[in-house]
Length: 461
Image 1 (cartoon, rainbow, N blue to C red):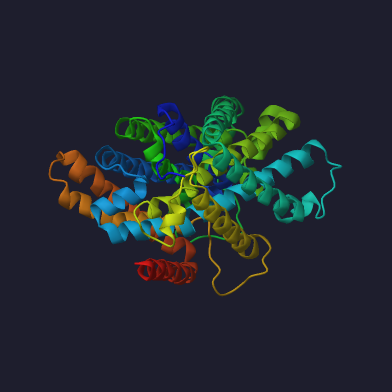
Image 2: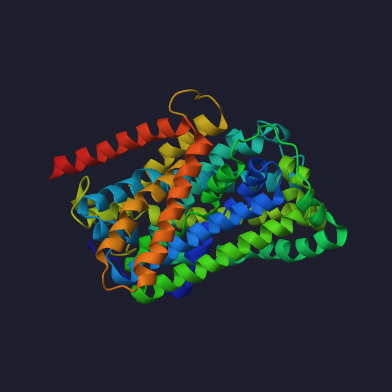
């Protein structure tokens, strides 16, 4: 065993990691949600996507500047440590290892399983599930749960046993997932103009079960899940060749690709089905309307591959979190978590911790969001609130960057960080409007986890 990671990823892999992690389930999973939040108001939904994308881009640009200046083991932890201080860097790393990465990885593994089963049952209607597909068996049935755990173990095994294969999986799934997005963006736009569906959707709304008092805020909050993930690419900065040059390039190029893909896809979907159909059935109905049942069902396969690629990228970052702390001599048992296997060049102990914590978050997600067995106290949305927490934790980092970095020009030191600061505050406010009391339950859990992190670190020291 040694304690050093090798530089094995190039610029293209880094770009694919940015694009591949962000463009996962969110573009398919949240398009319907955003229409529901905006009461079927297509222009308001487009505005929500634009605001969410703009916030992501200004944050991404600011952190790309940090990437040019700070480089150690894990970008997000490095930046927090350099701007605010070592203790803040530790808590950022602890949060990433115990809440942020694992909760998202668990969700993506479930979505991969869900869309795999939807593809199978659509292709073969006689395929038997314990809970029929029409009753939600693809989402909550035991087959879905077993397949979710299989995907979790699979992406864990790929990352631990062959990091280079994990990188190749990331690039290939990124290319594959852009195929249905590109098709829908182009063909859906043309189809919508020819049939008049696009114009009708722009001028009409749909009926929804619940009406939000702040539809734009709640819709932008929903885009947070779809746009989140780019920061995870910084977790492999110690393994990117010429990281100070290539990581900022990957962030910027990847961010532009993401925003363009989301906007054109959302407009293309609006051309394939009415607002009411999209609210009730999701984006799949637009694909079947345009391409027919057979090709339309293939969307579910592409979505499953897309989600798998995102889950792989999340696990790639998740498995390095405890290592990034241990490499600094912090956290529980740093001598164990800092070990890197000579044959695979992977921090195996750190990866095992990541898998176990991810499994815990999946159990929580199942009990609170899927099965409905857990109701009342300590129930919150584990797909969005941890993401909004990251935006909250960006605030002191951005303020300190503006205060300390006197060698940067005005654009880099003040303008973009100030915009990122405003965008992050907007996300936090939108979260409060969207989730209400769920925020309180989440903050209690967050405080307990952070306190445990402080105790284990203080005890070791």
